[in-house]
Length: 292
Picture 1 (cartoon, rainbow, N blue to C red):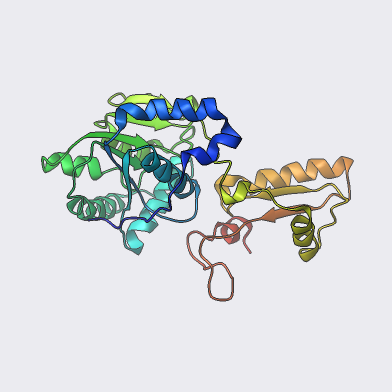
Picture 2: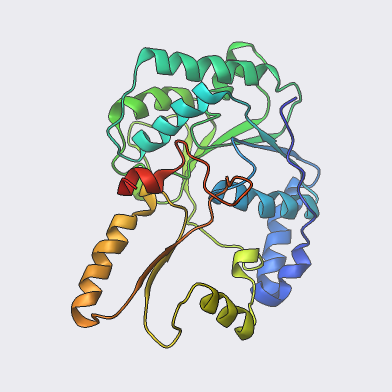
């Protein structure tokens, strides 16, 4: 069995105040036909990034609605995650190498993971490219059960045709594919039913929690930020796909009218060492982008 992520309970009724009773009742009505169904979500990490944040809420909510939902993780070695990092960047438009050897590293690791999928589920949601080949290997072994959905959280509007061509072949036989925007849907993906679901936020997640003014002002003082002055800021992962260069360009425009406006780029990297520094590696995109 693949590693299972423990998820704390989430109560649908906790959203009554922020979402309203009508929205909560619509959610209950939509879930009613799926009572007792077994659902599996598979991705590559339990921390950092939007997919993990989404699943911590979604899995908890689905279980509270009576849908038996499990979240499991793909396992991989350094060579596999190096390849999938290249994949992630290529699918978003970066010019990166892609070789038959890289394809083989990817396929070999996912094949090993497929052997560990021993339980049957009614619905399987596979998130992003890392686990995409699971469907093919289970199909080849005649062990495919339930309906499979590939959930793409990546901007494919300027994707590498070579790398996308490889992954398109892996997801053509899925029952459905979900994208966040119509612009990201690829015309050659003709097998699955195509659905677009816009991004959403969890109003009860820690990043959206209310902060007392004294707490806010204390944080600003700690970093020497003058709350009386306008600022330009980006709060995100240090990642070139969050477009920090675009923020800097916008800052330069703003300075023409507001010469004293400061710029702040803020992030908390998901991997820190024992003294709080970013662990070097492929994820250290800030240093790579700015040559620091």
